[in-house]
Length: 432
Image 1 (tube, rainbow, N blue to C red):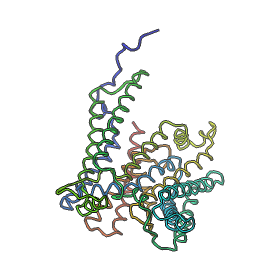
Image 2 (image 1 turned 90 degrees about the vertical axis):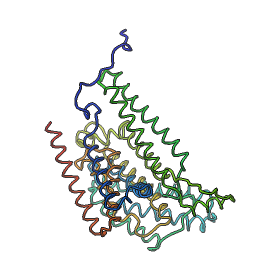
Image 3 (image 1 turned 180 degrees about the vertical axis):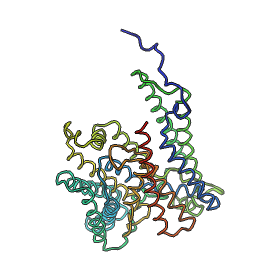
Image 4 (image 1 turned 120 degrees about the vertical axis):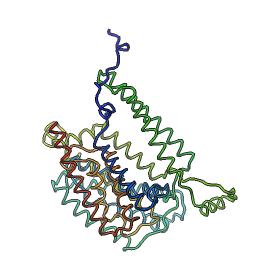
């Protein structure tokens, strides 16, 4: 038996810096556009855009759209579209609001503040979203109705179902524990956030070096050691930098005093405490990791990309494309319900206009993130970055004082330009 442990690790042939680091040029372009966008708005707002407070608000405002964009990647990769995501978010939000404020306290006699209310509400909402998504997927997969028509009908149906469930009224206040899934109502604090950052950085570095060892073990060329170390340093720096910014946003003094008073304590003079990582952002990170694993490591994910690349070949190879469609839309429905939890918790109530125009934002985020409308290609991290770019664009224009109609004009223009750039990029890559 040949001893392979003494064999040198094959490294890639030298090229330019980007080739040796094996960086995705399209991803770098998106990051560059996001940085330019932030710097531009920071200049126009006299330094208010890149403050810890605004970055904190930007992250929590991005979460609900980013979670749905993760599901939209699978839908579009499979050559479908879902125009009902905003309406489905509204319906599941209404279901959960009615459940925790009317059904459980009054019908079932569970008193306000009962520790089981938030959990039952979550189960009801997530189940409802999954079933509605599966029903729409069944119509697309087994009845062969185009997804555009099914979800366009769903856009009209579920938006108005939400209205009838609440009689068009704002429902609140919501359960206090349920509100933890929102923005400032649920954060991890500075110490826990630093510990999670250290854990995340360690896992990221372990994953990068683990992938390197796996490639070398199978005889594939790998990046030079310095390039691998550079990527590890960049990744760890980004994680710790993000947490540092969130910890730099301090809880207002009066709110901090009330928190101490609620515990029967006196706040020390001059004490400053940062919010830390919001629970909603932690949920988004978890969704992103799970969805990425599904896309890259599971049979379900491989089937999605195979079917999107060539539906006829996928069906001939034995993939049950109808059942696959049901599963994809069920997952989309589940993520819409999860986004409804975060959106309503951030607002502290269910409002009649919740989720309005989220269809545009979610699809735009996925497409700007590099998901091909022709199917077969898309990334979870790209969709999240696309959602962040969309939210930064809207927030920046609002801070500058741009009217809402013109904001939508800009967003629509950016969406068309993103598709055009994607087409040009793929043609050039294909030509090479």
